[in-house]
Length: 116
Image (cartoon, rainbow, N blue to C red; front, side, top):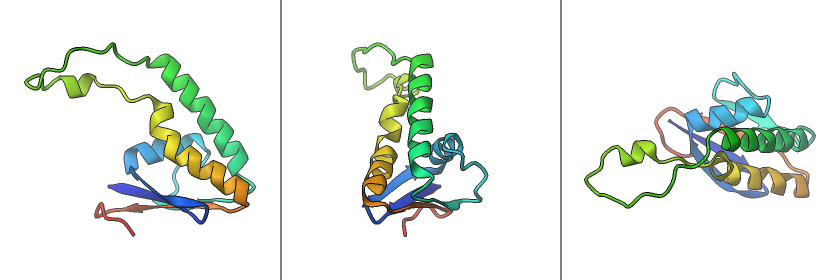
């Protein structure tokens, strides 16, 4: 399932819904039934909360050391770690653009995995 974040200030951001719900929960938007809005007034505190969460998560989950790539090692993908600041960056960029333009951000989860 995918979630699409939309704003007049930036291109749409598509994210796996599990990751999107995690980010939304830390922005104070948990249990939104798959859609919602961050108003222009809510966005600055959402940015601060998301940045704090990313910092804490990345501190508690440091990246794994680089290892030589082995195409036959099926466990390598499971060991790969994406920093939360990297995962959240497109949403943070959208939120910052929305602040600059005084607009809002919406999101919608797509059950079929497709976009809008």
